[in-house]
Image (cartoon, rainbow, N blue to C red; front, side):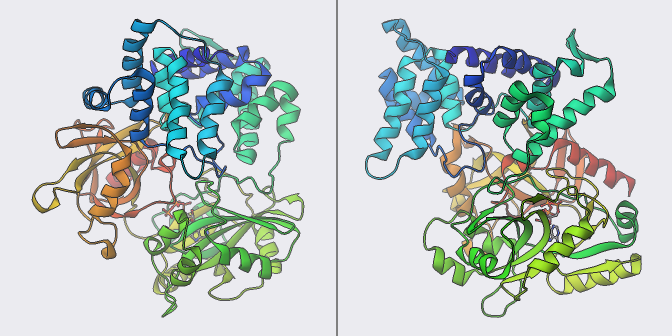
Length: 582
Ligand code: ATP
């Protein structure tokens, strides 16, 4: 397929914020897409060239794009920078500059989807001397043969910043509309008419659950196209491919929590670490974060604990890894160990200085059997059987069976005293629902609910902070994967690194992500997630979300979260109404 066909679709998607319209555009495009192009098309529509769990990353910073534009369009870097400051989006800059050049040469061969995809994939495979120049060449090669509008989307894809709004729900529905006419969705006058809602939802559920199992829309689309409903139902959890973890809503007290999960239920310590999914097939152990990133190399000691202490030929376990002080043995807040997640060198030393204890709390696959439909009580019984506990290495999440509010309150106090965040309450007769924040487990944390916000802009400081970014614009995510502002924050960030998240650290993280700069204000790629607490959520005309956080304060960096995991607008609205009730 010609790349321009995909680009036209991206451009159409960008021109509307209406979800139904986006769904229609994608579904019509999928109908026309041949099987041989489907994998690439689905990934590129999501602005990706690898599935999320793949260890390969494109890893190209904005500076490199400037050089590639320079090479392709023959315009000097200073002038490109000027355009960049004026226009903002580097994709738009590429479009404009390639257009200028094309008017002169009028030459353009046609790019195929495969060519673009392959060059972008090659970017991730490069290593060693000369890597930077080879990366520039690969991008410049594409830009040289591209039409101006193609250049725009090539640049955005390289920067992993597509912003055309293909959220998972939209893609899922497009697959239903494209490949299951029998689901009865008819798009008319920018609206959808469904003859039989139940039947339609049935198809949506089938596609969704195939996605929940595989986390791979390319596989789901291909299967839907070639093997239909039956094929989708056969998509199963596969050891080595991470699943989206189950999440739990927050409840305000033991009473309301027990209403959700029923009695008796299981109460567990809610550890303040990071989620770790453990996969084992024969002798191969793989670890994934909640962002589905493969972190096996970063945690060699965890691999050893699992090898030594967990029985079974194959399994997938859900757990929380918690840091503790190697001197006192006390649990440490997540911030202390978060640096291990991205670390690529000095791994052994890090493991010694920042050890983690693995707290296993669920099992979703065991010895060839998918366990997600099994009841929680049964899944817990399995981990009790297969895990040989060794404190400070690998243990089961501490748990009791709670019969009433008194049990929960007592256990909650005990958990807090032990240095944890609170407790999780779990319904004993509930299945595991990947990727959903359902009430099969709920959390009790006590204090005001912090939110995970994405930094989308910042401002350079003044005086002694002049070399740092010092005020940060925060955003939540909406159902189209757009980031909407909810306020600015400068509080809670420290002057020195040792004290927690510092201005210097944030500046270093954000600097390579700068997309544009006007005076003291910079726009940054939405990548960095911070946990923020506030006094209140207010309605506000100032920010694009329509809400503002009053007195926000940064608690910590959430480097285990991707921007897509940020607090959603829906959730923020829930919090807003919740606080009004009080
Ligand atoms: P939070 O920011 O409060 O950790 P979250 O958005 O990560 O919330 P939730 O499902 O809302 O996820 O809260 C549960 C989280 O708590 C899990 O994602 C997991 O990382 C952590 N956790 C700690 N102990 C447990 C436990 N015993 N059972 C389940 N989750 C636990």
